[in-house]
Image 1 (cartoon, rainbow, N blue to C red):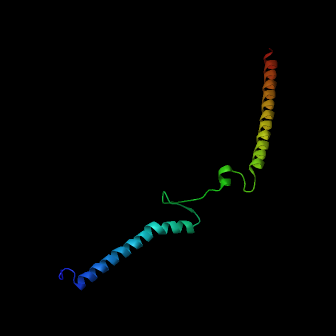
Image 2: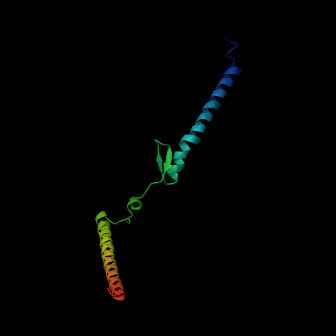
Length: 113
């Protein structure tokens, strides 16, 4: 027993164990903890379940309405735009129908029908 655990071997055993554990802690810090810290420092969100860094999206980017505008105000504005588009389309349809009728009359008068 004395030959197996002499002071030199115990020292080597403890130093080796210390080196392996220190390397493990450093690797864990480098590949497990540091990405999360870097993500948070950059102002993004850390998604723990997927271990990924994601960019937060503003609700204004999703809905297209400016920040500070309520849903009702944005809806009212969008409805005004739609009514204006419908009016413009109705005027275009009327003008197109009038042009078709005018061309038809001109063609009929030319053909003598």
